[in-house]
Length: 310
Length: 260
Image (cartoon, rainbow over all chains, first blue to last red; front, side, top):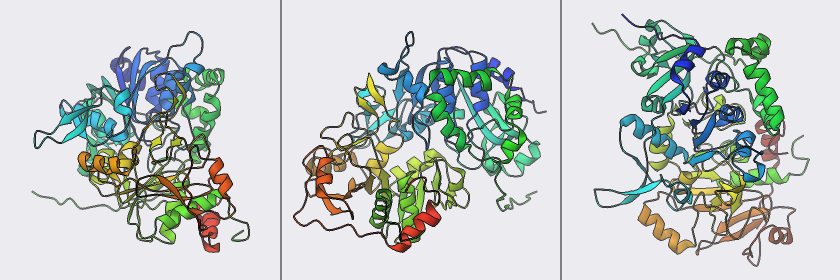
């Protein structure tokens, strides 16, 4: 009855991510699919427009690898640490290497970026919001415009819909059809997925449909809109998965040192991205002891009773 | 290691910020010093305070100091964990936030902030992170507290880029704009630095309110890029108590990662 959409990462990326696409790998600090980002690098995709609220290390690495020509974002930093140095080298003329070109930049605020996905998901022409009032952002981004309310003429700002060619999200679990359940920080996973033409759901675990149906309130994305389901344990490292493994803050700090130097960045990509065939090999290269150190102690939720109504 | 060692400049900033939160109910938290200040306030002057993190958490009870704004510790044991659409729409723009913390690379005399670029936008000398939630916190939180270290590079006559509005060009235009544009907030109420605490006069301009123990007026003047308003008799910022220093050093930042 149900069709399995389970694929390995190589197949899922080859089928759904093409040169020139607008790609959104979402997940706010939590559940960022580094596994997908690394596979896109290995498959040498080019001229991508990369959309993400917070580009994070995953886009710093993809920019360093030459995948992107444009960034759409709302906060461009290494969270809790500092700058994204590979991206800075492509945004500051003084830091640009010979032969390199500046990245095209299109920036919003967090609410504006979320709103772009919401408008895209709802098939609406814009998302109205109060942000940008008396900010210089509309002066440098012509896509942030004002709109008058038809109910009294009040003027607010508006942002246009964002409909990525492909959205890639990470979550705790899904069934083989792609019904995705997630807990912890939800970011804009749901909105970015519904806005996209194609969706890849990457999960820690594939579970029977009965597990999904036992707790339907936890389903954030239905299989209806999912094109491929990839099971990739530790696929969000060095970001984290609530309840499964902690954020690797030590690596976020280490990246600050690595990424300051273009040659060191390239060497890191050679060793940890091009030098491994897939995420399983990346995880094995770190070793199981390493990930044991990132495992939290347990804090299970209580369960609720949905009732049996026949 | 409690109250014996004199308070560092960062500790003075944290304690002064915590005092500014006395009795506040719902606070939008940032990482770093604001995070320690808010957690100190919750343990001392504002036990009922709800901590809101932009990543989507209302009523956080962090068991450790989060490095990033989206640390898993802010989720476990929180009152509500919601989507960012809900957080920015229902909680922030919906007017449920009493105090928001902001910082920046540059601030001007009216409390306007730059977190976007140093230099020209199209060809920046330094590319900064950008707005994140700052430009919407600035207008939607009922009041704004700014935490920044003073220097002539950061306290400037003119911003290179205005990411987040404060009192614009002064209180009159700011009040008009707030009413016309339907802002929920009344803008910056205080600036806490490593040297003192500042407020805003009736005309919307920043003025020194108190000087931290150990700081001098010469230091204050030398690290601000305009002629800062200084009242005739400047009171001293209340010194941190032994208990406040103990909480910071033993519970909130035991490794001294932020405050030492």
